[in-house]
Picture 1 (cartoon, one colour):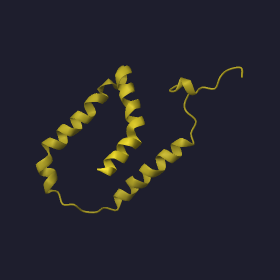
Picture 2 (picture 1 turned 45 degrees about the horizontal axis):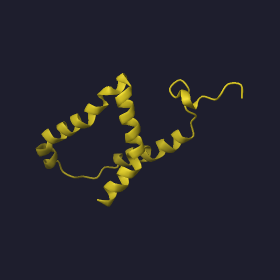
Picture 3 (picture 1 turned 45 degrees about the vertical axis):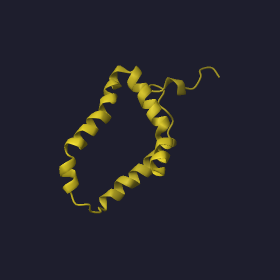
Length: 93
């Protein structure tokens, strides 16, 4: 339960941004359906998923490493002014 609370606290800004983007950008309005559809697929396949053996896999370390390194790499990049106009440098300063 504590882990869920920590995850919710860490991802709250991301989820807030996503919901705002889904609400205001028609290109991403389908974003509201993705969690519902994912839940539906997992729920409909729950019996088959329960029967799968739980096995460790070394390939999971690659996914974990990417998940840990990518956000740190992205922090060093400057935002693209075309996608984030608020990050553009002021002209004439």
